[in-house]
Image 1 (tube, rainbow, N blue to C red):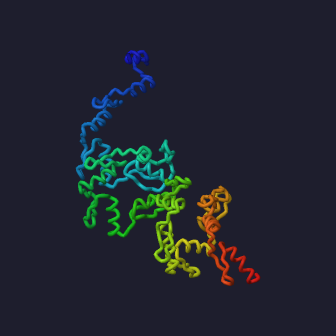
Image 2 (tube, rainbow, N blue to C red):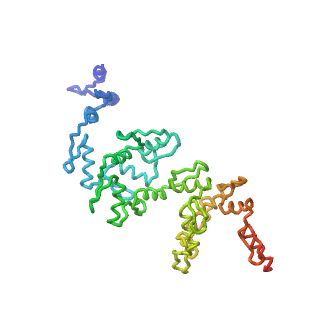
Image 3 (cartoon, rainbow, N blue to C red):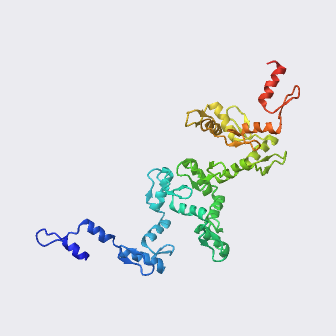
Length: 396
């Protein structure tokens, strides 16, 4: 019937007659999928595509690498693989000039610069730069663990986690150090090991060229550039760029302080706070100002101090353009615009925009008076009240 329809649309230009197939008819003919897989029933528009597909069922891999003897079902897979041996990277980023062996890797890389995240989770609306990352993320919601170990039946959300796990049973250690010959079951362990020999940093940021010894450290660093904060507090909905920062933050809600000072017994919510506190007892001030010679127990304090000399105020409010010398001052300031008061009194429920204000408020309930007058011994809950009181003695 199709042949008759095409014959009716024949036109003659002199002799001999030429058959002209109109574009719409050609499109319909091409779109017809007349090649069918007799194993799974899938259809294809070209016989060559069907042939490639059939290799999935037959396991046939007719294309062999002359270097390592690895085999592939399709010629283009072999071509891509050969670049591992040749080092060829024909696809170059026009922004930072980094090169890649596959075009798909270049496409993914460019999203670092553009911030594009075209794949969205329908459950929580979180977005991702790669479809594979979205697929793995969805398993958080579904609880799906499609990859099962056939030895111990343990299940995993990702195939590579299963592959790594199976080496526990097989004892396989495919990652070998080319310096000393030591072998490892995971590539990450080899990477860490290599730093013993090189003393170098192996992972580089494409944006600012900073280097890291671990891939996970690089991933965390990149979030500085992208602004990505994938870890969310389920109590106050605040977001964080690192999971451990979220863990520490949650302790502000629970009151947990698992780290204790051996000298005075004071407790802290994270190890950094404990380390800084310990210097009160030791008097250690390892960070020195090159301008005035003043010393500090923390590097961050030194950095902020130097801005007194330079006048630098790198943190600017995007609402009123006011600038600040350190980040937490900007964060606190922004709450004057938003009205946010994230710090809550667990006794009366009153909220505050700063932890210092909450601490002072709590003394109303506890009756604690930390500030003492050296002249008459009277105590006060706030230092400003002590200052006012001292003026009575001095007459100032």
